[in-house]
Image (cartoon, rainbow, N blue to C red; front, side):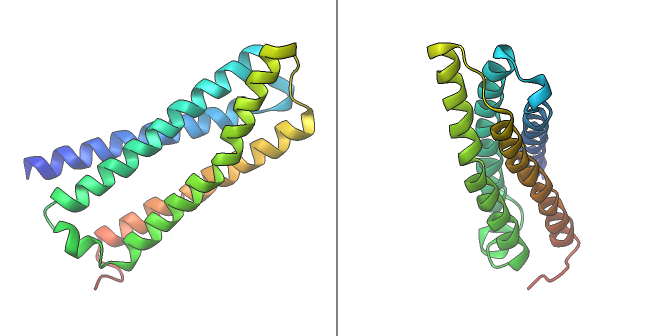
Length: 151
């Protein structure tokens, strides 16, 4: 049970980190707050968000492999596939904002220009969609833990 507890703890810490950094991106990515420091910070926060996502994935896989129920049980559950699919969709959605933040940072370094208001708004919208989709993953997790739709 110690290994199971430590794996759960690591997964929860990674998830909380992911939530903190997607929230930070959403808070920072506002046209009215955009300045050179925010452009730099967004790029940095997005890198940490990506690292947190990798940790969520690794700790989640570790829980399925070394957890009490084992990989065979977890990977046969539809709710795990729903969680994983949502995670992948969110990850794919995060590519565009990441590339945008990098481009903003390069433009700032090259000529000191800040992004246009419309581009900031559309990028923030994508970040917000990711954050809201993320809310469905714990719902699937709770249902899985309580035996809903378990095979």
